[in-house]
Length: 388
Image: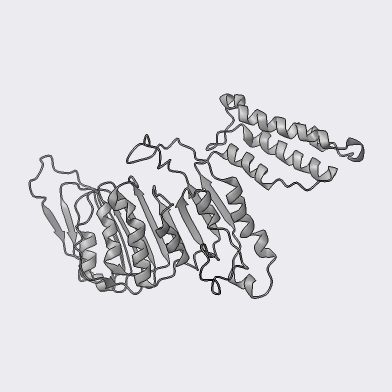
């Protein structure tokens, strides 16, 4: 196959009806001599058959594999020395790879790594102990498993060792699985990633959020004793996702309830946003070139109504406001409650049962009482009343 450049191989025959004592192996070797082959996508749905594909590993640039069976593509990849590989995507839905501990090998050109594992395939993360990736800039880890599992809880420690060994500089990091973010290894990883622009992690508590607050005038280099130096000075996108309460013994394992909604510390989040937006815009000189402003914050599966209420309270100041400013603030708040306050925190669709929510009425009452402070004689614009 002298002209073949891209290979997409999908094997989805029904599994055998009778269980096998020894899993049969089916070997495909017709692609090993394709001199121009660079990109391979391999997917198999076989549970009772082990597929082995001979590939010209040293010349491949991208490799993506998804398997529900006991396939050996991860082991074959390691043994094949894919020195030109730039992107690697491994998804183990079935049993994980049988990776043997040994000396680390280096993929000098690998820039993008994506891994998926579930409760049965946590051994995939042993890969972190076997590879060195000096060019790695994008890392995504996805999974469905309990963070309390021994192998799962050690993921961050393994990743930290990989980053230290590789001396790579991540620009994109996504943890898309239940993870206890209170472990110090996570913040050590972030401190070693000064070029990171995109970060997705599970829920951060108050302490975790405050560690993301920037203080540009904090001189870490001259103050080595600083307990929490500035981290992620170039962060542009921050995404948080609620997976459940890890401290609750009633939390289901290995997965957390999908209908749960979390609560984020609005005051700490406000400090993060302010320090990475308005505070940065006021910087001059060299400091302004060391930091990048935050562009987007994405919160998933949080109680949107409570977040909105807490955010408004956190951003209130004790400074006396003019009638115009107070009326404008009340108008915006009432409009926001009218359109969003009674909606489901996820779907944002008006539902009758939400109309009886006491928190909504308490917030509405608080806003209406603030209207008593308006000097109506000096404020002729009645738009705030017209919208209600």
